[in-house]
Image (cartoon, rainbow, N blue to C red; front, side):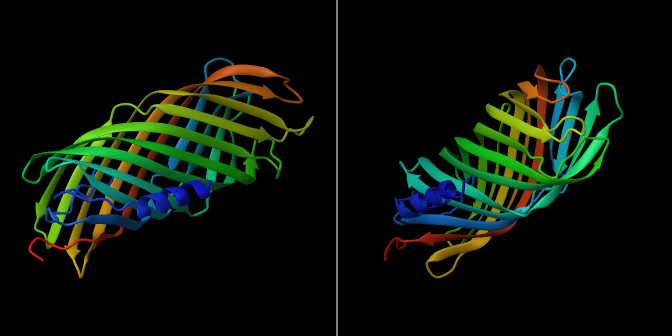
Length: 317
């Protein structure tokens, strides 16, 4: 998984294309206020990501459940070092395009999982959670007037979490070798607006983008130690059928010796629901199938710094 984000960053850094005035572009961030004769280099972002509420995955059976389980829920904090890069491309004075990508260097955390059973009291156990999250995206921006743009784009997002080393189990058969994995692949279209104020020396940008759907797929699998006859396994996959995505962004930058340096803040939320078909193989219950409803809720904040490299000179120089 690590090779893909590294390759994305290498390709984006290698592309040095002309940038039009007022076009920098990254996830709706279109600040810059560079002179028309300037050549825009890439922008680099580094910040700390935090999800104080905790990301959650929930599963609920449509009928009887599998292996006696009618519902499950994982909840864990999502935090770590957020890295991103963007490259603007000028089409003309009114239209610009931006390519970008991001990668989360996560901090490991503990995930609390709860279980609902068809004929027993609820159970729970704790896992070590190891998330991975990377994105690539492209957007197009249209200048509507002085300091304002309309933006439309698409973002591909891969989010996965590996759960291992379970402990603190209660009313659930558990083995140290049990594992669980969830993987989401989403293609997120978005539209929005951007507002910028400032001058070639210093500028501030505000943007809001989103979309009332989160197209994509999800896959989940887990093993459960069975005290009677050995481990149980259940696995399911499906597609998102409802949800929404919303993201707000702001930054400030100032020109310092051939570069623009500043800070940024980003808030992002995604809510999604999917229908999943599950099958299982258990030493006690045997092969079973059922459909489950899957839901995800993820809300994050990112605070950090940015550097934009300018390869050209201002007009008249």
